[in-house]
Length: 186
Image (cartoon, rainbow, N blue to C red; front, side, top):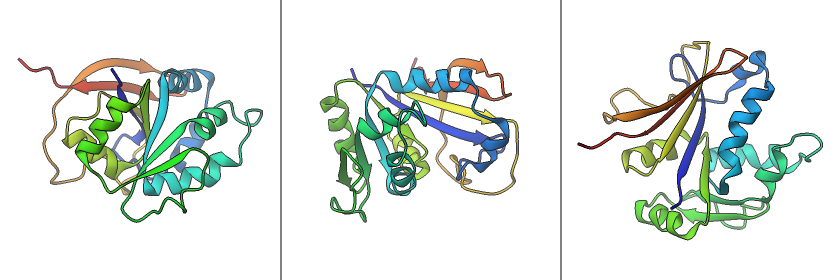
């Protein structure tokens, strides 16, 4: 069965906004390997419009020689959740616009994809997926910084959410990789 795996870079205070604060911590081999384990089983990428529009120009210009992750992002089928982006505007290789967020459409996508679905960034989309119980694995890469402002994955006044801790990994650059799954039901 397909698993939706969400990957978020976040600060101690929960900010997932454009993660420029990651730069000073580098991208060591163990971080690359950790993310590589997420993408290796994934045969599809699911993104919100904003993240898609940030990723498309950044990744489409990269080669495997420049970044080992480039083939995954450039060659893998990308599904974009957006009510404002047209299919013509989604010109990054292998991109499909699904339209606005629709829980049943995402469930069908899980049934259609052979392999896992990787989600990166896309805070608005991820909030909806979490609220609808569609996230199978939430991978938070928590950086040892607090920035005080920015888009947070869990907004004030949002819906209460219970998850189950699946794993914790300490990376060489001080980042904690925390993995959560759906709350266990008794």
